[in-house]
Length: 399
Image 1 (cartoon, rainbow, N blue to C red):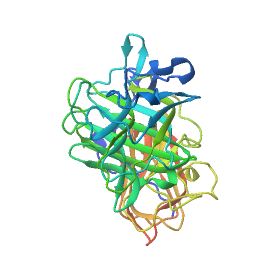
Image 2 (spheres, helix red, strand yellow):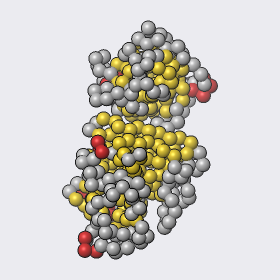
Image 3 (cartoon, rainbow, N blue to C red):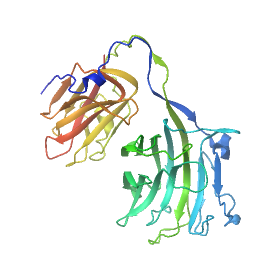
Image 4 (cartoon, rainbow, N blue to C red):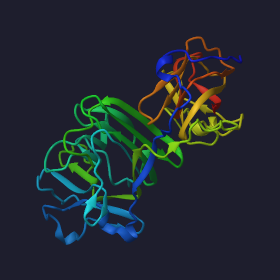
């Protein structure tokens, strides 16, 4: 059924008046993008390569290998604490005398490609391949990406280290022996002011897109990213092997205010501003039903979520902030009886533009919406069928 709807709630917070002065739209500003061939090991604020000098005959354990950084780990390697192994790099060096400083109140993003061979296996104790930490010796990580055995299954997961809040997890074995892409965002905040988003993609397919808000992502001073292999020797599954890890295409971005938008608001864009933009989803039914199928302008393709689970969502990154006046949903047979249309400036904090608990499928053409944001999502709260959620088209219009 074709339906029109206006803003359902929080009108005071989301009403957009005609601007009286220029407003800055948040943008991701590239701060660091090392080229292994030219930057070499100068990309890092610090390098922890066999710091206990346990295996000098192996030479460098961390090195440039073609267009990638390579981390070699041998079963005989030991850290200064002999119950573990560590070969890691830390920070984002931008010159011989300076490195990026990730500070409280800021939002940062790192993207990179990673190759995990089958010899780098998940363990029953810790095997970390990415961390965020405060500077200085000792102290617990803030967040960790780890290879962990869960009920005997090899997984890759991301957690808020203390108190052990799981952000996302998926099976490791389908991601081994190939290049996968990681997109990680962290809003640095004390107490409940922090947030993280962890995205894993393989061959263009989103495997995980998980977000946690209201978490503690700050200890003191500043935050630094760490990459490499840091693992305990306490594994009981017999999974420790001579192995390696490869990283390439590393980039760090800071969320900045960007350039002010013109005053008044720019002329509305003809057509859907969501067309062809990057889209991700909470889950997919399988190959051929990825999020991109709902924003490609082709009514024969679609996104479909995993079946039988609420909530599920589909989000699109418009590339910059737009005033949103209309959203059009073309449901497949698996529709939402309850859902929200939400917008966000940073992909973490969401605001409702529209809510319903009486969806009946077909086409929902929601007009007279009032709000703005860079990210827009449909957040399904209740399925209208025993299946999942499925959209042929998710169109966002500016005006």
